[in-house]
Image (cartoon, rainbow, N blue to C red; front, side):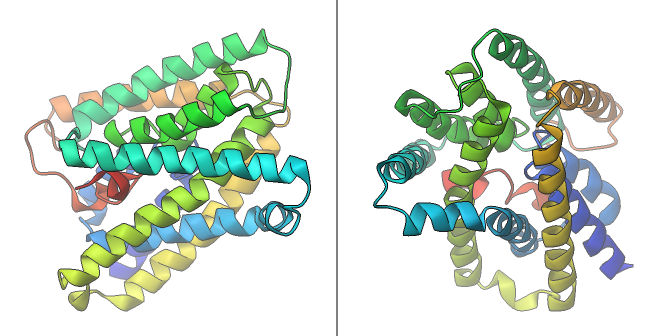
Amino acid sequence: MEYINAALLGVIEGITEFLPISSTGHLIIAEQWLGRRSDMFNIVIQAGAIIAVTIIYWRRLMDLLLGWREPKNRLYAAKLIVAFLITAVLGIIVKKLGFELPENATPVAWALIIGGFWMIFAEWAAAKKPPYTSITWFVAILVGIAQVVAGVFPGTSRSGATIFIAMLAGTGSRVAATEFAFLVGIPTMYAASGYELVRTIRDGSAANEDWTSLAIAFVVSTVVAFVAVKWLLSYIQSNRFTAFAIYRIIFGVLLLGLAAMNYIPQDGDAVPAGAAATELRPVIGQ
């Protein structure tokens, strides 16, 4: 059963990490039945999702790296770097200030609901704009800020926040906004996971891990994330994000209901360990 539970958590992480529906909210519920997990476990399954996206975009990444002499590639890469640096600097500032919200049901549920309505509004507003595919400096700056906001407010969804701020700021194309959001998410999430991994190894908590469970969860998360992201990239070619927005609202209401009935942790209750390494939490501190 332990290996099955590990695989199920890998499936949940793989599906929810890059879809704009928040991995934190889903892990909060899943761990009530599948058991709480260590920080190391969550680092591993998140790493699987990051690797999957890296594989999907490896051609684009190689084009940016090897084709840096082309002005278009240099400019795009510079905007990715600026967005990442803004996230890193603001993340450190937020960590020093000690500002973070609890990762339990009520705040996550409200973030899901508010984010759902935000997505509907963003789609409506973006539809009125020309379908520009260019990423401006203004978009890059806002995407960097949005990643930090997603980390401060669990349940916001990093991918959702970055995609829709890009669309509202002038990138009317869902495809172009999603690509930039995912590309800037790759170094951001590698940095976040690396930070948390070093911290976990230093405090010695990695010594008692079940490495077979970790391996199963990692492989499952990688495969599922690969399929989920490939499907999403195909889906948004001809569909809006409205279905995800409606799902977020329904799921958020469900979370509020479960919290009210004390089926899952509420404000002030113990935070599930499994939520600790999701959505940039390592970047802005524990």
